[in-house]
Length: 431
Ligand code: IMP
Image 1 (cartoon, rainbow, N blue to C red):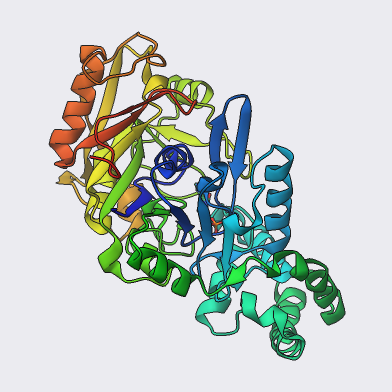
Image 2: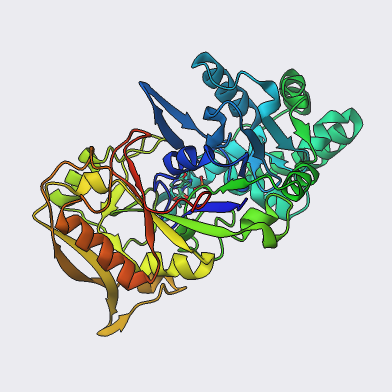
């Protein structure tokens, strides 16, 4: 059976949760391999609207195993809140459904405080982070002073590591950020209170996944954020702190890249972004507001209004290149209904030169003007359409145009919030 990686091809919030939920039906295991509770994957099942932050969206299917891989930065307290919420809604009734990597780094209370305080101190130069401690936790991982899941189960190791790191964190909090400091005991007590609740999920998930893959089980790797937020390939420094691209699925799960059979890029039929940073096809007019209201474009994690704009081929083609995307899923097509004409950004005009690649220099992206191709819109409500062939001609033209300009087939179309409001032209697990 094939394995598939699902990643965001824009700036996050592309609707990955829904597509993973649909595809999870055909996979055996779903893995999160990067990011942390900065993600907010929304899935609508019947009357339930579930937002998952750290647990893979596959958890909504009773028979699937879900893995939080070593590449994730894990916040135990928010994980337990998420588990409670899932159980309250009748999901996650089988404790063996979740496995947590013993090598994942933990988000500690000081990471969150540093994240928020730094943003305040940065003023107008802030990144616009989610405030969940993601950046500071990945910093500690790279600096080799992170606390990993395995560490909290050895009292002496945990205390020693925490004591060493806290000395530095408290100095930084007090002297540089003017913030309150943490006591060693307070953090130890907080961790002791929660560690028993997760112990039975913790294992070597690299070994688990490798064995399952060898047995022919199929794995769906669920990316978070989007490729334009990748720490290497995104609009640096206005990015998240992890690699969000498909290759990270191997690193962040502890398996070899030979298992990544197909790479599904999820792109919204228009573009959104939260936080600061360049966004060449942004619409600050009434069309932008129309998309925001009709598409419910408010952050699933922070509630912040999302910036909205036209579909940007330069950004999506960049994602196709850096991920190796083999097929695209286009989401929220229904939101575009009712617009007389629809624009697609095909290039950027920078100082009278046309560029079709994302520059590594954000100043270039900040100062360029989008070049648009205008296509005919459509007025039909798309929610009930079940096949590609039956879609209005203007919708098919829009998709054809994207396929021609990207050279990648659009195999999945989402035409509404619900699980069944989707048109699958090619299922990576079946066709
Ligand atoms: P951080 O990941 O909280 O450090 O935030 C860094 C940047 O990534 C900010 O612009 C956030 O708004 C953005 N970001 C982080 N997670 C998500 C997400 O799940 N969807 C969309 N944007 C995100």
